[in-house]
Length: 153
Image (cartoon, rainbow, N blue to C red; front, top):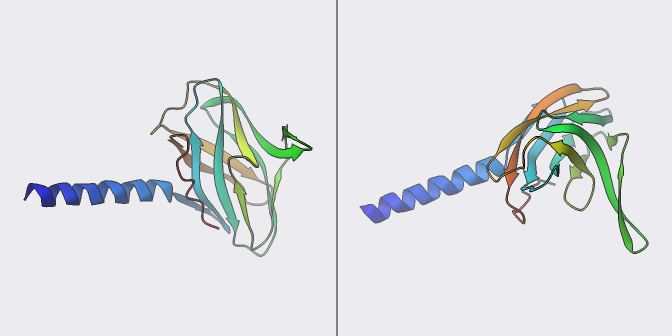
């Protein structure tokens, strides 16, 4: 009986873990999938997510904000010769019928002046502002470094 109970609890924990990674937020024709951040020891961090534009019109992510940080910026990372460079973006285009992934090593949401280090299991609100769709608040889950991203493409 103990083995069965242990097995059932293990399955339940795994299901909750998958559900947390598969977190989705619908906002009009936009589907925001799996907002997450990585553990951070300092005053900066980054948030990641995917946005599916299921609508017939293009949109644009123009800003993000969170009470977890003094400021939040949209950033791009890309190779410039042999050097990886990061720069602030004025926005991220969301083509109609397309999916845009903000992910480690690419475009992301930079959290500057964190009020507290991000610890595994923490959650914090993130408000996304779109040119056409307006604003939507999502919940970001802090994951350990190297955790699978869980993005759907």
